[in-house]
Length: 104
Image (cartoon, rainbow, N blue to C red):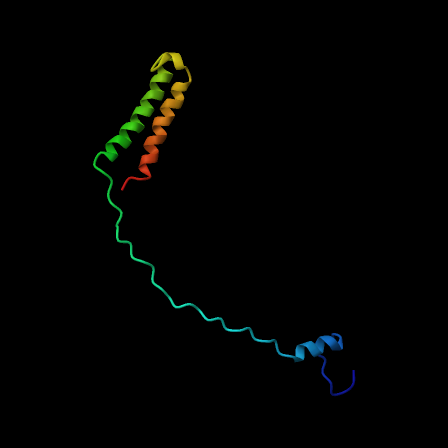
C-alpha cells in the first residue's frame, strides 16, 4: 500500500466506488387525512331477564341427565336410546354454556 493512503476495508476498487455514492432517498408518501371511526349508536343491551335462568337450567338439566344415566347403569332417563343419553346430556350442557357467551 502506498504511503499516505488509508485502507477502507481492503475490498476491491468497485466496492469502494459504490460506497462513495450516496444511497438514493425514497419518496415521501402522502398520508390520507385521519377520519375518526363512526360512533356506535347502539350500546350493547343487557340480556333479557329469562336468559340467566334458562342458561343455568340447561346446564343443570344436562348434568343431571348424565348423572342419572350413570347412576342407573344406562336404564334411565330414556332406556331405548342407550348411549345417546350422553349426547343429549352433553348437548344440553353445551347449549347452556353457549348461552353464557351471549350473557350481559
